[in-house]
Length: 111
Image (tube, rainbow, N blue to C red; front, side):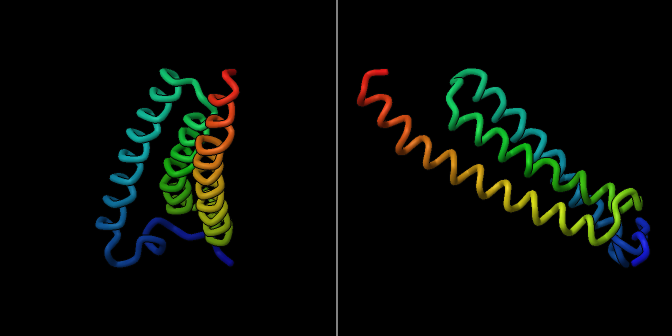
């Protein structure tokens, strides 16, 4: 399979898709920054897991940009994006589980 060029990857609506990718990257960076600030303030494992999940969300448009400039091949692009989706879900579920069970148990034990 040949690497995708920016034109072939973006298709006929190239600038529209590029704008969405840029907007996604900016929004992801803002969310990632806010999550890291919240983790720094709270310092709990649940906040760390959410910060890592939002970092995975931020990396997705960066993978798209790398694919658009043929740095990452098409199949690798899709593998990385699905892996990042899976990582995001696992981290969010881990944060919810930790906050609902482990932290609650620690509070009850007075630790």
